[in-house]
Length: 250
Image (cartoon, rainbow, N blue to C red; front, top):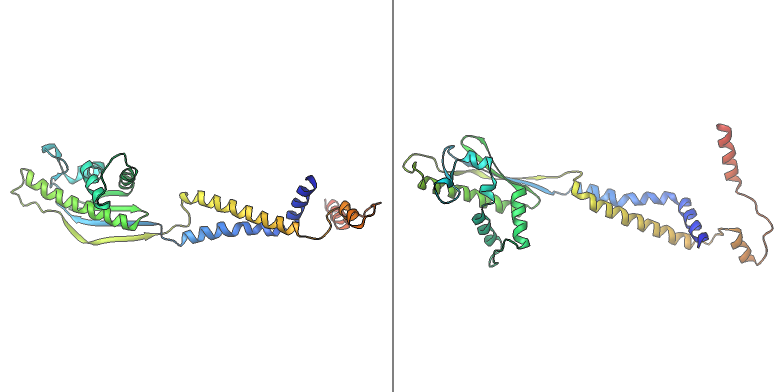
């Protein structure tokens, strides 16, 4: 057993140039991932009036100006009724249970990817930044329509219902941008797995090559093959010469 292990490592050392093959699959994965679109930013501009009250919930306290929505976006995006309505739209015919894994995933997606901002007093932007283009378009479209509806509802419920507030309206079409990156943190685990598989694969190939190598590996193998005792052997003169040259250079 000890001889076979020693033989294997000697074989690996002799063919160490083959170890470079380990790097090819990880490098291919990195560059292939870099050329793949894995992030999308989707946004829609909305023309608004800065003091227009939006009816986020029932009752007078539920009327909020856009600046409060921007400060506390969770009250707009994660409103229980709004998320339930969105869930039934995405998964037609499926009952809504807050403990359901699919419902929790939807909540996490909304929480981590949706945002609202006001670059100026009369413009609001609802945006998505995430991995799924289709779900991003759905979310942006849904919350844009919700903001417009809540603006109309807020105007009707407020004391300003007879005023000349401008209702929210879309500005242009939805903007979609694609993003690529040479490296992202979530690629670390797949990269490690690919590297380990590559390492094991190359080591197995080297083991097969060494196993089928017909050359003698020790004096004992020569003695067994010839059926004669070994009285002596000559060392590897190349190694001795290299060692001597190394000492002289020092």
